[in-house]
Picture 1 (tube, rainbow, N blue to C red):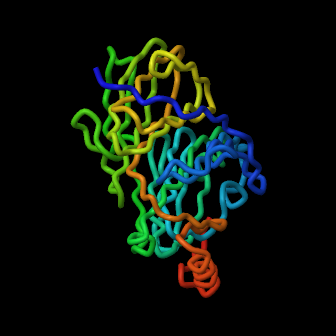
Picture 2: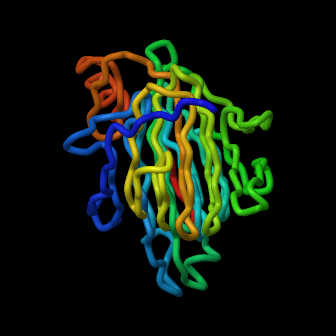
Picture 3: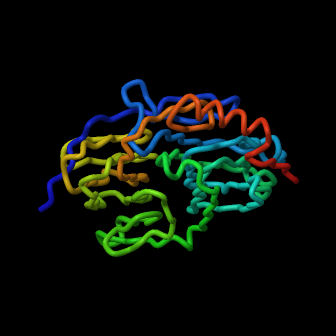
Amino acid sequence: MPSYRSIHGVIRAEPLNMSGFHVKQPLPNGSLDQVDPFLLLHHARNRVEKGSRPNDEGVAPHPHRGFEPVTFIYKGGVHHRDSRGNDSIIEEGGVQWMTAGMGIVHSERPPRTLTEAGGEQEIIQLWINLSTEHKRVQPRYQGLQADQIPVLTSDEARVAVQVVAGSLQGIDGPIETHSPVLALNAVFQSDGTFEFPIPESFNAFAYLLDGSVRINGERHVSGEHLVHFRRDGEAILIEALETSRILIMAGEPLNEPVVSSGPFVMNSTTEILEAMRDYRMGKMGVLVEEF
């Protein structure tokens, strides 16, 4: 029997208004700055009104440099456009994994089908840091629909785990990463149980979108809470007390200085000022949206 990782803390996702776009944010938090290499997690549930205009919804064009903004799509779809010419609509169950690298401008809108019919859009956006050697790599976009991501079913089909990146029980996720990362989306039916092996050198957390679970046979955790684990064991045991959705993330820590300002994450203040200058000079490209 493997040793289970102890819980370092359980953090509530607090509401945050981002210029009219409402999210819940458990990371960063007053008690937790990062779970290296994971920097930020936003969980958004928004209602898109029937007949609304796509250009009035979502997030307008904005720049990034030095990290990877990753969007997990649970409901409603996301239309991604960027200054490198990528134009991609990913539906429910899919993932948009963007490496900002040296700099890119992108937008995130609900697809036209959603604005025409109305409905709920639910996503998680996670920021994953890049190491110093990869902060200025060429930008890259990886967009995968649900049917392009393998799923492991277990416990008489009471647990389904989508393997997005890394490896789980011999199943490899299709996303290519710049540092070792394990990215798993799990759906538990009531009484479903699953033991997640985690490489001992990785930092790890689990974010519960909804439902209720028991961690390692001891700690009860409800929806919209992030569980941060210590690096002192080989696995995490999760038992569902009701139908639950969970994002499990683990990764090799970079152990590098982090200096961030708005949409840029670098290693020094000088590099942040360079990013601001380069964006103003158009070096990250220009995105003109067409609706």
